[in-house]
Amino acid sequence: MRPTRPALLAALVVGLGLVTWALLQALYESLPKLPWTMVPTLLLLGLGEGFTAYNLWRRIRRRPGTRPVEPLMVARMAVLAKASAHAGAVIAGVFAGFALYLSSQMEKVVPRQDFFVSVGTALAALALVGTAVWLEYACRVPKGPDDRDPGASRA
Image (cartoon, rainbow, N blue to C red; front, side, top):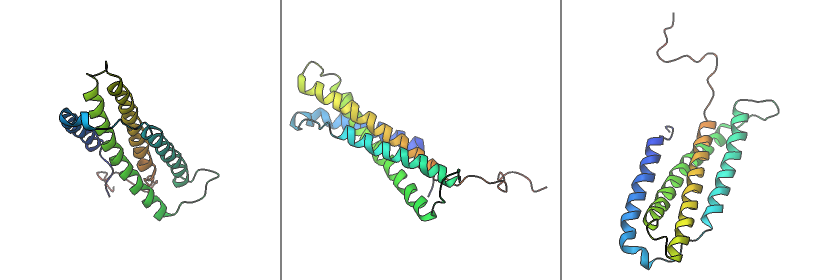
């Protein structure tokens, strides 16, 4: 499994934002109000992943007072991190598209409320992406004294 590429995450956010904006040109009037409950949910997920990343980072690097970590758990956390980063980027893109579309309708009450919910959700999703990337980084095995650069000579 390769590390998550920030360019792919950015492309997901921008691409889905534009697709959502285009779809909302025709569909917004038929949609219900956006639920605000995604904001705290995404923030709690990000907080949990951030806490896990910090603890896992300490355990992998064998900091004092930590127990060794099982390799299978690290693999599971890496998969969780990659999935969370991609899902967060998709959610951020969709809600950024909502915010982009609704930014021109701030004089109406419901679109204004939906605008603030969509901005909050997009920011919470980006926070989840950030903590997921950090968790993925925390899962990497540190380089030891025997590890060399691939281009270094053996002399």
